[in-house]
Image (cartoon, rainbow, N blue to C red; front, side, top):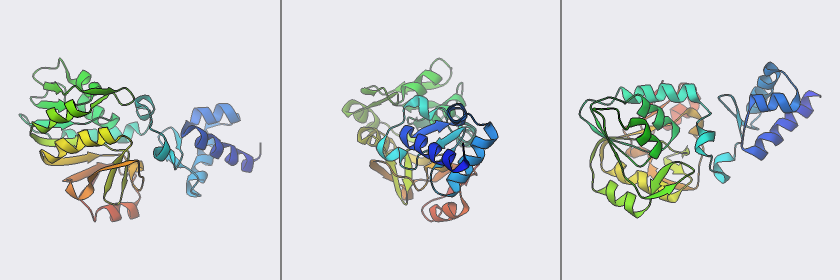
Length: 251
């Protein structure tokens, strides 16, 4: 297969699926790992797709498709782990914190097991990670369950969250475009906005692929965060732009 034909095929594959792994490209095109990676790098440079850990993502993916929890958990793992480690270092003993949904937040939860803190969350995945690890005190809000993100949302969730106060709140998102923090679900966005309003300090945990991307619902403003924690793969020009809105910590 000629190189030009390979590049066309890979572009078609990623646009059809939204996200595709290097192994899938190797199997379908019968090419080596090195060739697949070189082709993806070239396609990213030409603006055809976005490289992610272990594969590639369509540029329009977050706009018309909500990735499942399983899909999200398979990309940018090394970067998300570094982000979670930095976030964990900001939490002091005895604090009450809110943890929202998302795979980066789950990695943060794993690093908090056994810490002497109180955690409030509407994420079933986060609750399952932390429960049973004394002296960590964890509260799950309940509410209407969204299976795609393992999250509780809706009036009951919002009522519980609105009654509580937090030392720090840590959330993720699907995209950041200028000052807008976006997600796929209106209900999920609302359930994150409430604890952010009730927190003394607010932190956004996102890998560098989330910048200059937008999704359906803008639920918070970047100006209102104490800091964004992201990985050091962020483009220097992008970093400079977003530092105009808030503090950006790279790890």
